[in-house]
Structures are given as structure tokens and as C-alpha cells.
Image (cartoon, rainbow, N blue to C red):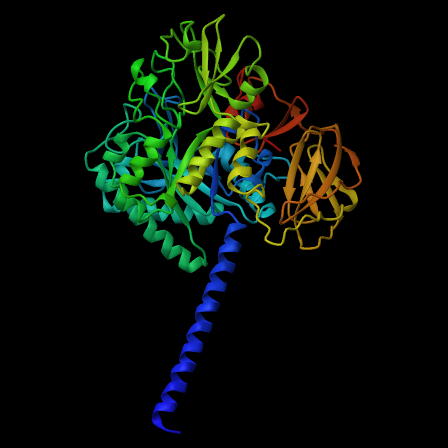
Length: 599
């Protein structure tokens, strides 16, 4: 065979190989594209405020974790000279506390992250806990929620409106930046979080008047985030995971001017823009809490900064500042804002008003569920729609109350906006505002394809079998111990839900001790199993147990000196003293959780 023939055959072979490679690449790309089309890369991030477990009576176990990808727990604080908190009298909670962990007062370097409310965060005994558990409270419940929902990631949010007073000091020096970053790693590891969210309101200017500010905040914020990123990456390499770093960002132009957004975007995993609170009771003219688009009628009526204060303008500002679209998360409110005494013209919209009406929990602020149950086309309120801003509102001509809020229609426009701009997803404040899950279901259905945040590529819809042979294995005056036979599942059981009355407890094994019960009281229990896809089994057999009567424990009384670990009864519940004191009238155990803890 001559050289020319060998060359032609070689060239033909190469051509065939290249063509085969090209075809394989095209098919592979098509397969990946088809696969990606069936899954969602959007994030849905919900804030859970620690105080939700107090008067709101909304607990971690009330969260439908299948509808979100991440939970931001709000808030941790920064320790400085042994204390944390913000004494600014204009703030909602102007006081300070000693820096504490789940065991009591601690000594840590300035700039360290500490629990914001140690009692509710990690000390309170919830059903299923024992007072001897090292970590209890909301943080234990978050850990259990993740065990039951393997897709879920939890993030500790630091600061917020009330507790941003020490960010400027912390970011100001290399030493305090290192203190903050080191404490971030320790906090994530200790309390089993997957990341940290910095909610600094705000660098350079803004926020509460008593907060610390410096012109250098603009540069120092970037340096602080870079230090945290370095420490998280080093820890992640040791722990075999990627720790998340995010920030909550103001939506107005001042935040963009006072931060190095392009540099920050290269450090953080994403940025949650607080595209709400654009207007509220601090101004005398009614307007919209979270308009998606600019309404020229707002400017014409004198609404401040209307051209900048809307979701679309905020997102465009971040894009123009160099933030990639995929790292922008749009904030949506699960609440509305209202005004009272608004002039009866234009259905109360963009009118002069005299004040704010009583809200759900605070003046002028309404949970969506409250609006849904009591206001929307009820009790003299009529729903209207602003088709320019793409938001609904309510007006009652009898009292002049105007309420701006979001519903499923406005969220549909916002999720379409997220998709059309290829943004990273949606963030909302906060879970307890939507107890009927109307808004949460809308976000999940639009952004997660209806499958929720608990993805199951195999399409598993088979529920586990019901747990069998539920039985009582022990009881005290304040607890009942249970055991049951394991359920089976086609993929695998990830946990169990123990239910009694209106309460529930998540556990991973086939035993549970439900604590914090009233003495001499009958309780009926059932158990259900949960799998990784979120399928829930039928209930087990029910068992009823009556807790023992309290013996040897005296009722609480004023004027008595109590020592640590003394126990008393109050309204049938046994409490343990956690701080020595002499009781006074009004210091009944349920009223002073800093002194008494349910056993």
C-alpha cells in the first residue's frame, strides 16, 4: 500500500472518529438538557424567626420543609465586651444580655457570633426532649427537621434590623474579622448548620440611629466576607462539604452605593434582596409594600423614591453593579402593610393617611393568613388590583384602612419575573405569616415544578407502611416513653412523626420520650413514618397513657427562695429552677423562662 492510500484511509478513520465523537457529544448534551428540564435549580429560602415559638405559637415542626430548599434561622447576634443586643431606644427590643450558649454565660472574643435567644434557641425543652439533652430548643428541632428532609439545608442568619449595631466594629480590624469568621465555623459545626447569612442593616449608613457606622464599612464588608469565606472553605475541606455564605441586601440604591457588590458577588453563594418594605407606616401616604414594577402614578402622588423602590428596579440595579443573575434571589413578603384614615378616593391608594391600624402582631403589619381569613373581601374590605405594579390591595371606606400585600396572583408575576431574568430563586419573610401555606404552595409549584424542595428523581410516590405495635414503655409525671416496630419502604424510611393532641415530634429511631407533659393527664399517641420523597405513612395504632401524679414536688409560691434544680408544680406542669432567686408575685414559671424550665 502506497503512502497516499494509507494517508487517505487514516484521514477517513479520523473523520469517522470525529463524527462519532460529535454525535455522542450532541446526544449527551441533549440528554443533560432533557434531564435539567425535569429538575429545578431554583432556590426557595424561608426565614424562621426564633420568636415564632413564643406568642405566635408557630414551631419549627409546623414548617412544611418539602416546599423549600433552605431555611434561614433568625437571628444570631455578635458579642462585644461580654454582651450582645442593641440598647438603641428607637429599636423594637432596646436591651442587652450577657453572651451565652446553651449552658449559660460564656467569655468569647469581641466579634464572635453567639445565640440571640439562648432559651428558645437551645435551652427550652420541647416535646420529645429531655432536660439533659445538650442542645434543645429550636436548634434541635431544626436538626430533626433536616433528618426527616434530607434535601433541606439550614443557614444561621446573623444581625437583622435589631442586631446590626456591632457589624461595623467587627468588620473594622483583621483581628475582629478573624474572630467572627472563626466563630462562624464553630457555630455551624456545633449546631449543625449548612451555612451563614450576614444580615447587616446597613453598612456606611441606614438602619437604627444608634448603630455603629464608618465610611470604611464599604471596603470592610468585603474583607469580612472574604475572611469568612476563607475559614468556611478550610473547614469544608476538612468536613467534606461546602459551607454556604450568603447576605441579605437592601433593595434601594444606597445599599449598592455603600457596598462593593461586584466583589461581594465573587465571594458569596448568593444574595437575598429584601424587595419589600418599600413603603409603610413611617410615611403618611399609602403605597405598596412590595411592588414588582414602577407605577408612575405613585411618583405623581408624591410617594418617595417610587421609581427606585420596586422589585424590577432593585434587581436591575444589582445586575448593573456586576452581580450575576443566578446569584440574585428575589425577596417576597408573607405579610402586608397598612395605613388608617386614608382619603376615600382612588380606593385609598396613593392617598394621604393619618396613621396605622392594629395589625396581626404589631401596628400596621398583617400576616397573609390573617388577611386571608379576616380581610380579603370580608368585613367591609374590598380587594383591588394594581395592574402596573402587579400587586393587590385592600380598602375599607368606612374606616379608611388601606392594606398592601402579596397573594398568589402577584406571586405568579414575581415567579415569572424570576424565571424570565434567570434569577437564583425566591426568599420570603417569614413562615408563620402563611399558616395556610397558600403562598408557599404557589412559590413551590411555580419554581420547583410542583415537586417541592424534596426532589425525588425516581418519582417515588409510594408511602411507607404504617408503624406497628405502638406501645408505652414507661412514663413519669411529665413524660411518656414509646416504642414501635419499624416501617418498611420501597426506598427507605428517613424518620417518624409522633403525634398527640395538636402537637407532633420528629424522631429518627423507633423509640421516643415525649416530655413537657402535664402530670396526671391522659394523652393519646400515634406514629407515622416518612420517606426521603416526603411520603407519609398511615398512622399506627393509637395508644393512650396517663402521666403519673406529681409527688414530692411543692406548688410554686411567691416569697420562696429557690435554688438551681429545685422543682415546683404550676398548673399541673413541673418546672426546674435554672437560676437561683426569691419568687415574687407575677414571676410564675410560665412568665419567666429565664428562671424556670419545664421538666
